[in-house]
Image 1 (cartoon, rainbow, N blue to C red):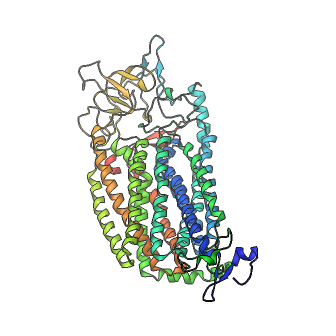
Image 2 (cartoon, helix red, strand yellow):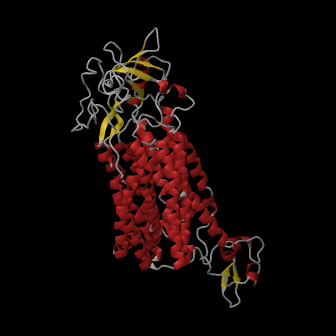
Length: 631
């Protein structure tokens, strides 16, 4: 070493003379390894955080739909607002990526995600208690009998579990419903979350690919993506737990609630998990503030002698001078040529087309998967969310990790990766065709999907709710408080079942002397009905086969995910890698991620057979779907 080096010099450009007379930066070897690993760990945790909050929001779509009494298409719009936020900044962030301090931009993104999650919680504290749709019953003064079928009874008014009078609560409910465009808070929070997530993937992956060995890059990226998948797993598990809790937990006595988590009116504590998600996103931002603008290429200076690195306690920073910051005007001038170069790449164009198809199918399916399981296979939303978290996502993680490992193990080149990905996608597609065999009968609702005789299906979905057995009951057509008759037929309310009396309270209420059920059970006068819709046992038995098929499809599809992603990296020039990720994400979300939940939701709405009713009138969320059309 020729001379002592001042602390300030050592920090930015400490150089030592090598044996051949060349100079090398002191900090390049000492801490490059550790800082790259720290970045990998921080990026994996940020992927965990964004996956955690993103999957939790996905798992709560049904709860949000019911809480705000909105349609599936509006839920799709809320879900799509995340993509809109991404699109607002994705191209700019990914194009300027190598020219800016990538770790700090990722840190800012994590903070914005945290802010967006906390904003989504606000409606819970601005709205009143959730008053689910149910009918008013009149209690006899001398017994526990309830008159469900009586022209004189005040049947047809939604009531609540509060101690206030129904009329007073209805007035409060109407006031809250009038201002209940509060779901816009959730939309804006999702928008902010999309903005915050935009820099994480393109800047993080390009940072890894820039400063790691070429043979390690795919493995590191696969490791980060698979590690990040633990976020969605825990997000779905948290969603399952919160969905099983009543939305107003701690405020309302759960014992007074007459519905259970399998009921389509049930709303879980959707807001509770968001508080945890916001905190996790905030923590994810912290490590990135302490990471450098750039690092030494991994393994580049392995031939340096240890004696050259003997500065006390000092680490290494870079293997070359820091790249000069490009002015915004210069970057803007190069934008169009770079864009032209990207879209002149045939391999990249094919990859973009594949991305559009995959985004459309995966985003639409994931957004409404829990609703599909609930309606098709008679499982509660909480159970559906739980199974996704403990079975499907771990299998997906394994597939992604194994895909990256195979690339590293066999040192696959771009052509071999393309063949591997093609085979896995074709197999996954063929397995997907088997979904058409996973059918289940439509819920038998008297006057809706089955005649009152219960002998056969209706020829058309046109409703004919009234029959001679309930013609004198004065039932209201817009109610949904289902009961299951002894005949296995579901009735929209106890009034439509023609029930004259009841015993018990809350979930244990049983209706008796149901005229519409009589004649199909053992004798007259012995018919009864229980609160809640009838369970379809055959659907429940078919569910494990559906889950096994879905697991196989998820594994095979994930296996080809990492090789496909590496094709994009290997097909573009090194200086355009982060820009390529941005373009891929932009196009995929504009043509797939954004429209898919909206048109999937609109198509699902078309299969609705019975809409709920808000406290003050108007259409709420859907209660019953035509499961054949839904599938």
